[in-house]
Length: 276
Length: 276
Image (tube, rainbow over all chains, first blue to last red):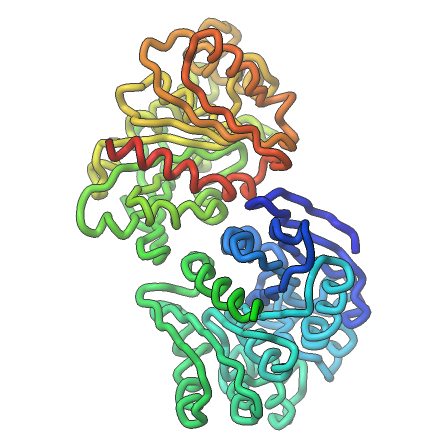
């Protein structure tokens, strides 16, 4: 792993690394915040998955999460949102291809060689982080929008690997909304049975282990009705008696101003679970 | 004033306005953070002046200051760093022309019609803010790099108008460093006597009223030795018995990660002065 950014921040270090991903078959950048406590030994890790159009930079420059990570002694790891590079196929538009990996393992051409973000986030990245940094194997995961989908979905599929999961403005039923339908059709093909493995709503129904979930959602979010629809998830959770805390935040939109306002609550929530 | 952005943030509103500036002879954008307390009545105002290449966006997206402004009930006002628009002259390079107004009133062609950032920040902007928002006339001023120069210089020239001033990584002796020499030569001409009115070091010598100043400076700042040189200011302050607190922050650089790490201290410092 090659360190390409290194900046003092809240008593720790906000770094960015470049590495060759064997899962994605390309070079990737990943942001790592090392809290002050990491200088003395292993610390738990909160993974953050960003939304459409983002890179590893958005969260670290705009969310202000480092303050809380430094307070609680939690490492933050924010990967990019898709494979990158000249050889990686792309599409027109912001919601497919680069910047829009949707955290799935693509099976269709031209995507299947590189677009394997599920495997990358769930497997290669934690292995890499725990080998190269003072990280314990105590993991939590969170994200925003497309990354909220990724965080909930990956946690639900791997409840033994994460202590806690949360999301901001997540896409909870990708199989049933335009963003998800477009991406899943392209990456996974038209068989909707296959989609279920990447759909939070479907995974909730199939869950045998109940991992409590925290979700923040702004009620002025421009994507709320068409793409996000957290009420679908809450109805399912009620029926299943599955523990989900959904906080509808009045006046808040889909931006990083919303994330910044409540990321402190999420870091505290994860820190409590990570240290049990 | 036309509101062009309006986003809930830490219980208040992060807004951006566009207005026609009679001082600068162009349209300008200015960011205004209204803390929750502004819904109930007038609040004091902290003005923030950004550095080279910045617009009104950098501080509001990267510094995380809204959290502290909401805690203390302080309005944040962050103007752009130069006049803007097709009719406004520009120069090659990042350190003259657009994005590089240096908070002076230019007297030379082609700059003098628009580049009047001193007058804009010290006079037009506070008048506008106090007329259109629930702002008291209790003002503080801070900034970064070129904006740190602007904040200290404007406060020293108008000690009756500001309760407190602070800076991150300020250019304290613009008459004696490359950035300042280039800008002052272009905007003000070659007579260095004229430059003194915009030079913190010179203004400190001439000050009749002592406004305590707080400065944070990273010791890993890539511009420290060539452009910033706070030791010049501290030697002068010692000789004059002028109260300046300079905090050298080990490991920190010139970035917004540095500002984010200590902006909470600055907002608290200004809040205390603003509420006396």
